[in-house]
Image (cartoon, rainbow over the protein chains, first blue to last red):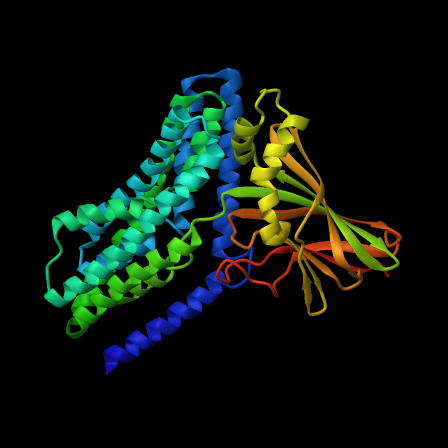
Length: 260
Length: 189
């Protein structure tokens, strides 16, 4: 009884925290993340202009640093697999460290997919890049979203057979989750391509990807760490928690399919 | 403690899944009035450098740093006309009514300091009283973040009316996380 009262209080506290954090537009955490992203982007643009005038490895280093920061802050906002990896970690009872690795991998694929798409379209097609990215990016995102839905349902069904989490599944999930390309990575990559700096396009977008990996890994670690504790604290409801997490993963894929 | 962390990790990030915004717009709105009613809106949007660079790479085909007459048609077709589905990000609140816009006229893109800008005009489908009206400018999908940086009033209401800029908290979008900027028109006195 005490456990359920505690859980109820925790849920109320989370809802209250949600209201405080999300409460009023522009002043809340989400608004701060958005504003910070805009400021960091402005810094990247400024440093790019300096690099164009002065050149030098120092400027490249600074651009990569700001790209990394942009990726880290950008991934702190919604839409970078944090919730999906968290749901996956809890559904499978994955440890914090393993969840962090999965989160980092999903962040890596998330960025690399965008970079690959940009370079393939830029060098192999004569289509307008912005139009092609939007068109093919949406297609790839739809496939990734459908993949998440199916994967979540597969995990849900697996709980009825009480299969343990397999390494292959842990490797497959980041690929599926990361298939959805990141428009921020597109934009930075294309920005430097527009300056005719393909190497800088690649390095800055990889730095951005690294930033996203760090944020996603941290969120995944927290989910995995907490998930382990929750699953052992509510041992009698372990399967229920796993199933809810698996279904929430499918639900996220479903939402993403219609949002992207 | 672990359970709290778990719930935080699930509930806090489990918000809208599509990461936004990716385009940043500085908007200016001029409200045209006649006999105390809003008849049209003239908007200028200035896009961030990164988005501008991406668009110019594709549409400034002669690489002269401008969108020339021959390039406007393609740009308008791919990057402006479709905004009609989102009322060109502009909504006029008058009492309980919300007026949307299906078409825009006098579209003109420019490039200044590497930043692409759009100027266009939205004719009101029906004129509404200016006093008490709010003009909201936002992208409901939040792919673009719009900030109103300047507002003005022209026409015969220019001397008596004032346009203020602020957040419109009564409207929440993007899963209730964001409220848009709005121009509010009031009497000067």
